[in-house]
Image (cartoon, rainbow, N blue to C red; front, side, top):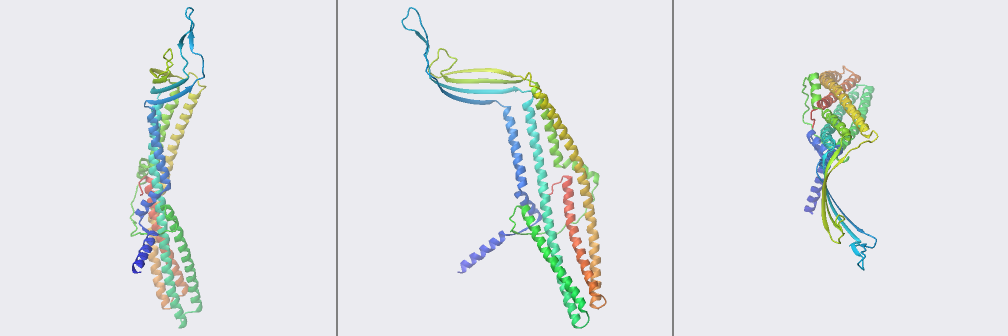
Length: 438
C-alpha cells in the first residue's frame, strides 16, 4: 500500500509538471518558433523552390529515355516474287506477326536561345528570395511571441497591484469601523470605503479574467494546449535607454531588412524572365541519339524473325518561324512584371523608412513615459502616506484617503504599462531596423 501511494503521488506530480510550465522569454521564443505553423509553411516553400532549382538543372543535362512496345499484327500473305522458269514463287520477306521493339534515346540541349540558363537563374533567385522571406517570418513570429509574453506579464502585474490595493483598502475599512465604534468616524465614511472595496473586487475579477485571456493567447502562440497552466519568469526588466540617430537607423534598415533583400532577388528573377521570354526568337539545337533492339528490325531487309540492334545519331534544329506574336507577348508580359517588381521594391523601401521612423518615435516616447511614470508613483506614494497619516489623526476625510489610494493605484498601473510598452517598443524598433529579435 505504501509503494502504491508513492507511485500515485509521483504520477500526480508528473502530470502536474506536464500541465504547468514556467517559461522565460528565451524559452518562450525557442518553443514558439519550433511549434510555429507559419514557419513550417515557409520552410516547405523553401524546400519546394530548392526542388525547383534541381528540376531546372536537370534540363541542362542529357535526357535518357527507354521505350518498349509489343504489337500483334493481322495475318497477311508473305512478300513473294514469281519467276517464269520456277514452279513456285520465291519468298522475299516472311510475315512476322509478333513485333517487339526496344528503344534507348539520348537528347542533349546544345542551345535553347538562353532559355534554360535563364530559367536556372530565375529558380535560384526565387530560392534565395524565399530564404530571406523565411527569416522575415521568424522575426514576425518572434514579435508575436514577445507581445503575448509581455501582455501576459502586464496582466499578472496589474492583478498583483489590485490585490495589494484590495488588502490595503480592507485594512482601512477595518480601521474606519473601529473609528466608528469609538465615534471617531461616520457611517458615511464606512460606506464609502465599502463601495471602494467592492469596486476593487470587481477590478480583481476583471484582472483574473484578463490573465486567463492573455495566457490562452500566450499558449496558442507557443503551440501549447489552451488548458496548460503556463507561467512566466521575469527576473529583471531592462530599462536602459540607447540614444539612436534616425538617419543611421534608416540606412541600416535598408541594408538589413530581409523583405528588401527578398524583393531585390525577385527583381533579379524578373530580369532573367525577360531573357527567357525572348528565347523564342532564337532556334533550339539538340544533339540526339537512339539505339534500337527490335524483332524484326525494320531497317534490316528482308525482315528476320530475330532481335537485331541498330543505332542513329544526329542534330535537331527547331525554330518557330511564325507563332502569331506569341513570343513578343511573352516578352511584353515579362517587361511589365519587371516594372511591377521594381515599383514594389521602391514602395517597400518607403514603407520601411516610415516604419523605422514610427518605431523610433514610439521607442523614445516609451522611454519618456517610464521617467514620468516613476516620478508620478513617487509623488502619489508620498501623497498617500501624507493623507493616511492625516486620516489616522482624523485630519483628513475618507474621501481624501480614497482619492489618494486611487491615484496611487493608477500611478503604479501606468508605470507597469509603461515598462511593458518600452520592452515592446524596443523590440519593434529592432525588428524595423532588420535585427534578429529571437
